[in-house]
Picture 1 (spheres, rainbow, N blue to C red):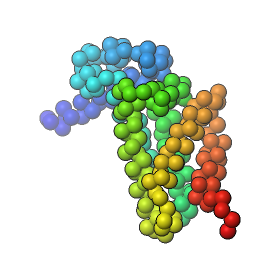
Picture 2: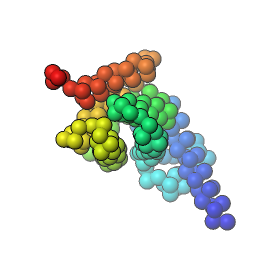
Picture 3: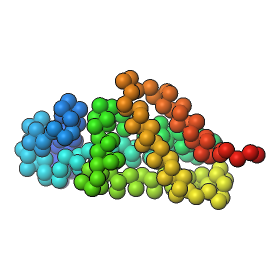
Picture 4: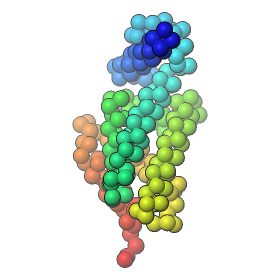
Length: 204
């Protein structure tokens, strides 16, 4: 019986998230209320609050799940990818692909400025904490590549992870602001910049 209850709770949580995203994409994140989310999901507002403290938590959970899928899928392939640039580009492709899978570019256009430049309200504060965890995962992947002899021993993996993560946000912002997001051109630009970071400008 407890297993059934847990499954029902998970299904209700997912239904609330799905309803919220539908409304966010249709009428905007800031114009959507918890009451509207509850109505869309077919539950009461107190039920929504039982699962999520606010609408910001809904967004953050969806993005966290997408990031974790990208990290997990990259880890499953990391040993078979010889080129460290390809490994990092693979991770970025998954992060971008899953991000656009869970949220339409129009919603990203609204949220990215709030997330990155919105001050200290709950959405940017929560996103920063989540992004710190993602950057730590990227650092760990770099460290594993370093231990495997694919990156130079003196590389500052924390700084490299910061640069890659920071740059990927800029590129995502550019991508979602295109009238028709060009994923192929985006991936090519990310590869060129990643190669520049890892192979450098110093004469050999």
